Amino acid sequence: MPAFAPNPRTEPTILGGYRGPEDHVSERVVADMSKKILLYMPETTPFLTLSSKIKGSRTAVNFKHEWLEKDFKPRKVTVVGAQTDIDTTLDFSVADVAKIAVNDVIRFPRTGEVVLATAIGTTDITATRGIGGGNLALADGDIGVILGPNYADNSTLGTMKSITEYPNYNYTEIIRTPFGFSGRDVVTELYGGNDVDTETKWQAVEHKRSIEYRMYFGKRHLVAATGTVKQRTFMGGLEYSIQSNIWNVDGIQLNERAFNEFLEEGLRWGKGGRQQGGAAVKYLLMSSRWGTEINSWAENKLEYRILDKTIGFGAMEYKSPHGRVMLIPSVLLDEFHPDYAFLVDFNHLDSVVLRERGTKLLRDREANDLDGEAYEYFSDVGLQVQFEQSHSLLKGISV
Image: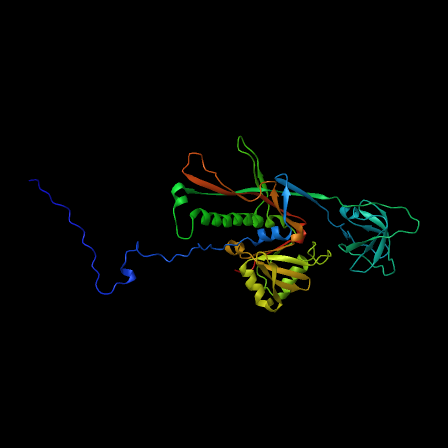
């Protein structure tokens, strides 16, 4: 008779006393799992949102999108060398003389004297001194302001002067966010909903964050094509575009006066500025650190305003002597740039979409023989920062 020794059966676990939920195996306990997966920072792109909502996007027909700008006529001239109160030949630089035409009236703020230009040389003008009285000696470096022309009755047209337009441009940038799922993952039932749906929503947030980062900190650049590799373009963002109004307050005690001094210049230019007949309102896209700092001395001057009821977008409004500022928290600045704040005039800013290549979700990106599904969010977008003097960068706050 063959020797037969069956394996012993595993003894069941014995429980004593009352049974509690902790006594059950985990596979038997129904998890109390929320039906939604909470997204960390679901809306982190106020700049992208506002640039599209306030003015809308510009559709470009070329990845290099261009525009023309025209500035005011420059009216400041600087005296070269000392001039007596009776000198009729006044010396300036070649560049300053080019601004002056015969019949122009020039005032010197330090002395209050007004003169009339009667002839133009290369580095000097002939002038009638003391218009209205009060001619005084001029010092080297004195500033003169061209008030404009004065003509005699029945005179000829005189010298014509105008300002040349200057071109500007930026590139759109291709931003792609790929993600995918295995064949089994697509059909597996999960807590928190279908993995395809929840992940697609999460990837949309990340794609928008990528665009927002470029709009703040991108640098315009083009990498030329080499061989079969096509050219690569990068958009220039706000930091790259703003050249004139950069305020670094590092080491400065911030208070209401210092902030208003910043707004004195920041709210000067553009349709949103006080001098252009606009509503004198701009938007400060700021980190939470800036919000804390401003609130510490401006709490009584801040009022909540709903900017867009359809998306529930609101902001705190600060009223300065120079105009209104909407304070917009930007979570992206909190992460790595807590000392940054951008004062933006949306009248002079466009988000740009290359024709038929705006942000979209592309499906079926997987290879034909792949047991799975691949997707991507795709954008070929850029930023058009016009009249850069109407925007400002505020940085350097202690963190």
